[in-house]
Length: 131
Image (cartoon, rainbow, N blue to C red; front, top):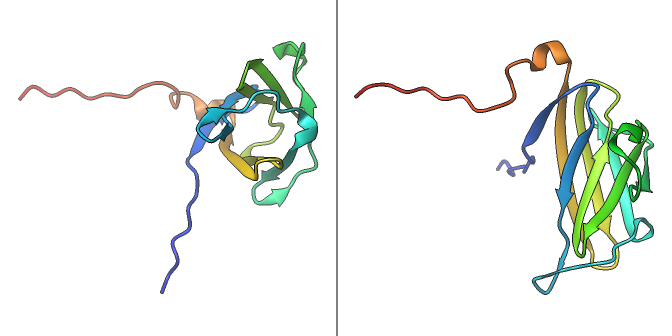
């Protein structure tokens, strides 16, 4: 019997671009405020191999200062968080953040493609036919 494996959907992003995502942690249905980088464990993978990146506070760090090698964590409103990173290689990236106090984890997957191959991959595609 084959056991199904869940793979989170990968978001396609162009190389040499900063990536931003929002992160949610809940406790008994309520958002958890005040999570610091010291209370999180970060795992970063590139094409299935561990990459030694660090988790840093993103408070006060402008987007132009986001650099490869770090994932920036920011609480932008009570209980609302964001991560920013700058993938420095083409490939399949995965970041996992674990809130150790509540034993919760979130995972994000990015398919980082060269800018030339990413043209036309952003946006909505539609087709209309007259019936």
